[in-house]
Image (tube, rainbow, N blue to C red):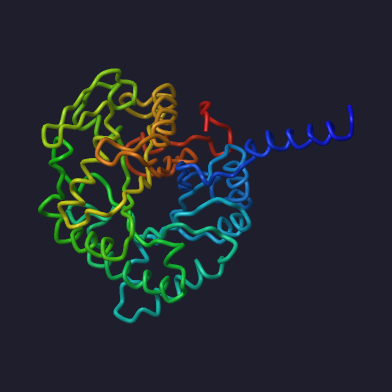
Length: 349
């Protein structure tokens, strides 16, 4: 081969090779790292967890509290992070004196920035104004804490990088079909001011979306809940949209509720979604694998019928089975891995 032809071959090789290794940004898939299990808080577990995320090509993680070991393990990685303000911290951060909120941001965000790629701060998780719920005692603290944390982020010049929100869930909204979605009257005094704050500051709403629990409450066809239905199950006369899976219907119901509450431009980030592999009705390895794999494939696509054309940023619940979680037995079996890091079923990420 002549030197000229050899050089042409080398150039062609790199022209072909470069697109294979081109970094196109993180996938819309993350994993929630809960630690309510035997062995999940042991020394070195956080580093093993981050290594496991990288090995399985997950580009995002949700941490439910600012554990230094986990944050140290994330330094220098490209993994994007949702960091929660635990509900137990909300009261102290909601004070009219924002000192505590500034200190929280300093200790748990700025100390690790740059180094850790923070994406969102979830100020509280599933706070519910229903007085029968254990989280109702935090209702008055969520919005003031969000405002104080957001101001601390703005003062640090990080508002374009780190977005402040709270994680809500389906129990505070109602409506069917999706176009009729709204927040419960008992929840509006709590959630509407939050929606207005998010809208004013161009912030997303985090939402925990579980077709499994909706399936238990009002069973549709199981294929509709598992993304395997081959037919349209719900036709929405309110907007002439059609639904083949329950996940899209739940997300769009929440979009309608958010719009009706004054947030037409708010984006919903699915901060939790999963399916249990044991412990209850239709909780099996097969159904869990089917749901999670189809969820991964689906959210990379073209959005929901109501919000088409964009992938849906989604965090799978959860990284591990958590045998110390309270509640129904299914709560202990949402993990993709056992505490030793062995995968429970195969996924194509």
